[in-house]
Image (cartoon, rainbow, N blue to C red; front, side):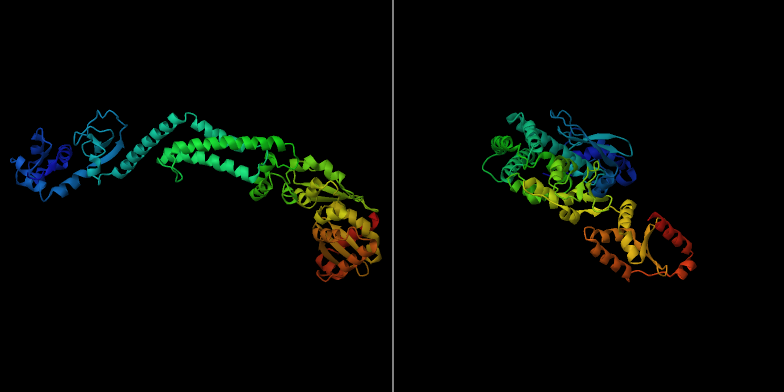
Length: 468
């Protein structure tokens, strides 16, 4: 048999295109093709009326012709699925479940092209995109079919998975690590078996069981494990050393996942290390009465916590001192003192522990309190401290020659705070070292005049004398 020179899909494509109408290039090809009747494919011998240009078009010029014709067309869209295959391909006349719509940009004609025929013309514009779309449609249909199959076996599959997730998310306390991990892994297995089967048609793990049997097994295991978890919760929910959900949420929010893991590894219970890591406002507030009771210091008292701030205040009141205000961060207090208070019924603390973690508030109130207390010592040393509120600096004034040097207020407060509990003779020794420090430059009275600050310094010194 002679080999076909044109297939039916090629004939129909040429019939609906503009390029074959060019008689100068292709002779009577277009007219001859339109006169063909009831033909599926043709050989050159089957169309004897074809002129010389037409013969050339179908032999050594055929590739060039087809390539040019293809450029007239572009893949417009993919049709909806037709399960009954009532629509036939406009090129090969074969019934098709899926059809592409292609449009001729020169004459506006539209053809339905079957998903098989479209692959014969891969150079057509939009072909790749529409092929991807068709591929996705096929994939989505397979997914839908597998999902329906799963739901026939397990009508409540999604509810089962959702309930397992909700159970894990609403645990009121931390479970022991082994029990929690088994529950979590079993819940994850249910997810994986269902999702991998629906989306990929396979199993997430190697097993002799099929996907439905694997899901049934995981479902049963989760039910048994949740009963064990419920028993642990009932037995331990009232234990103050059991870590509760609100505390877990706070720890995770503050990037302390490893602390939660340590608690789980300790059977869901706190130890001193993990308890010291919990410093939420609500948690510390729940124990504030205990913390105040365990303070045996006669000098430092804890005051009420600031609303929703991660600190509370310690107040020092000793000798002739008025109150000095301190701030202690929850995190420092819980780590050094609070955890011990909760875990050890005999534990107490005093000013030594408090001052080890407290930060003196850098305020003018604290500064004036301290300067008032040491005024007599400074007078004895022939010096005075002056507060320059304009520059927010502390000025050390040497009485004998009126020379001055400046000190940062924050630096002075932090330095003095280390000696806050020392007896006066040690405080005097510390202050003497401050006056002799060579870290800052002294300004003579003459230099002060040059800088235009002499009168200001004299006024500050006079004011200090009057206040004493």
